[in-house]
Image (spheres, rainbow, N blue to C red):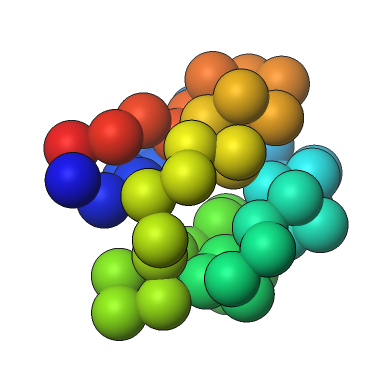
Length: 57
């Protein structure tokens, strides 16, 4: 499983960037982008996202 961002739901708040301990999340055009090769599947971004834009797939 890996974290996936729904770009239609992401509000660009960057909370997930701060929460990601593995540095897998960056911002592009005000939307969170997850580097699957760095994601350790900890789900901290899923829990932290206030708009529920991140899920595990």
